[in-house]
Length: 369
Image 1 (cartoon, rainbow, N blue to C red):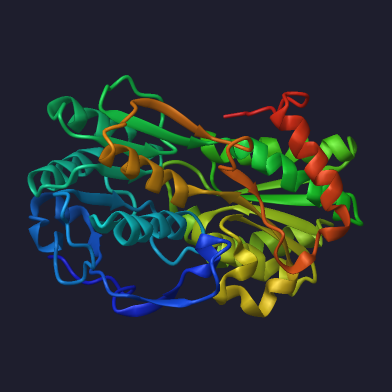
Image 2 (image 1 turned 90 degrees about the vertical axis):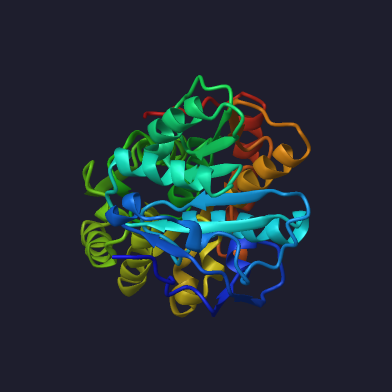
């Protein structure tokens, strides 16, 4: 099995739902993306580097590689936000970029081999999405101390050439939990997580804390679509929809998801039951694939993965690389909530007040990871 073009190549991709305030436009998406299966570990990735698809002139001699998480492009949230950051790097910084999609469940040993091949192909810096790249990146970074790496949502690392980019997802989730509690009529709300991991637990804990700040007696129904190491919960839209419908049957009238591409199923399931849904990572109200049900998308918990990816590469270009952890939170607008559609305008003042109390340290958001 060799390398092939992703089905997301040579087609228009809407960026407005990813970039937030940008005017709604369709941008030609012409890069060749590589689907990385277990066989990739023994194949050269040279066929993915450079290429005519890149609009950057590579004057700076930099080639940026970004490895997407399970779920891949088209999830309308995490990966698409990172991809928007990659496009911005190419367009504004005039740097050659390339994205790589991985098959589900690729073991660490093969991730290490992939990273080594990217190094040999001249990519620097290299960015991996999610905690699953922490150990492979650490291992490769030790061997290549002059290279620069980043892991988004990674675990802590002591490597001096690795930057850890993380989000205060508990803070953003706290605010949308408050939204849910202020809008519910049944005093029962729901949460659907893609996989039961420490990172996704922070969404759940923040959401629950925010809701119970408004109403200490509110019931929060919780469902995880898969257990580690099964990552299917981030892609299984059918199971996600059934989960949302089940929570609706149990009385939940607002359902928040942190489930990647599977979250589309949660939103469609909530809408089918006449319930509110809360999106994640990007403003899912503005997502074209969800246009038919957008009037049921109350808000979205925003995480600016695009900004984190852009900031990291920009810093490398400026000679301002920083190892260790960089936190994107409410104070630096790394997380927040969307207001598209005006569906929460009647309670926005109360939510903003909570936001300021968190920023000032008056509210301590619990983070259960």
